[in-house]
Length: 370
Image (cartoon, rainbow, N blue to C red; front, top):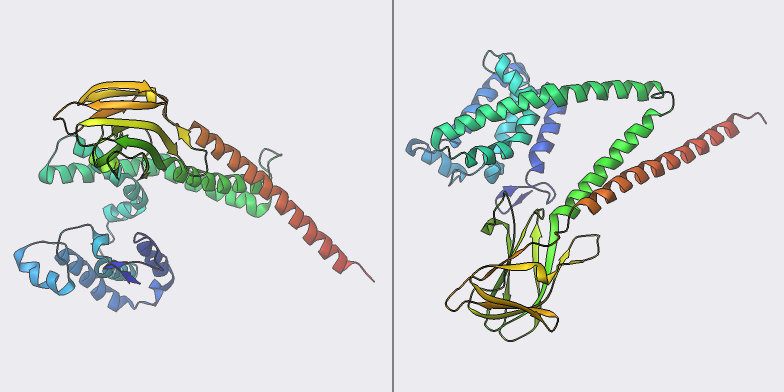
C-alpha cells in the first residue's frame, strides 16, 4: 500500500488513491454517528491546516508526521489522504453554517472543473509575471471563475443530456426514429477509448539517432513547448568518440510542435546518418536531414555520402540545429481515432444484436410447448 513514502493502491498511480477513498466514502458515510461527525470534521480540518502551515510553532507536529517540505498534498498522501477522507465522511453527516454555506456548496458543485482547470490556470498566471500572494489570489479567482463558467455552459447541460439519454435507453425509444439509444452509448464509449489511445500514441515518442562524433559527449533532442525549448522537454543520450552508433532518446507526454537537435556539447565534427521519430503502433517516421538548419555555434553544415555533417565552432560547447521540415502530425492519429471509434461501435452493435438474437431464440425454445 505504501511505496517510496507515497500512498498507492495495488501499485497504481498515486493520484488514484483519493478517487478510491472518495468512492468508499459514498458507501459508508451514513454509518458515521452525527455527534461524532461534528468532532471529527473540525479535528480533521484543523490537522490539515496545521500540517500545511510551515511556521516554527508547527514544526514539532510536522516532524511527528514526517512532513519536511511544503510540497503538494499527494507528496505526503499517507498523512493527508486519511485526514481528507475523515473530513469528507464527517461533513456529510451534520449541518453546519461553516461547511454548509452557499459558497462552499458552489465550490463542491464546480469541484471537477476546478480540478481540470487548475494546471492551465497556474501556467497562464505564471506567464503574466505575477508573484507572491497576488499570484495565488489571481490563480484562485480565475480558476473558480472558469470552473463556474464551464459548469454552467458544458457540465450542467451535459448532465441533463445524459439523464435524457438514460431515460431513452431505459424506455427503449429510438432517437430520430432511426438511431437506437444503445448505438449512441456504444459510439460514446468507443470514441472515449479511441481518444485515450490516441493520446498515448500522440504523446509518447522516441527518437532514434544514428550518428558519429569526433569527441565523447552527449546528444540532446528538445521538443518545443509554449513556443520555446527548455530542459524540461528534452531527451539526453551519451555518445562515444569516433564510433557510429544508434542513440535512443525517448520523450513521454510531449506533443511534437517543434524539434531542436543538439548533436553534442563540444566543438568538433558530427555526422548524422538518420533521425527517426517512432510513435507507438505506427511505422517509424524518418526526418529529412536536409531540413535541419544551423541555429547557434555551427560553422558549417554539409550533406554528402548519405549523411549530415555538422562542424561546431571552435570553443563553442553547444551547437544547435532547428528542424524546419514536416513534423509528424496527429492528423493520421486522429484519423485512426475516428475510424477506431466508428468501427468499434459498429462491431459492438453487431455483437450485441447477435447475443440478443441468441438469447431470444433460447427463450423461445424454452417457452415452446412439448
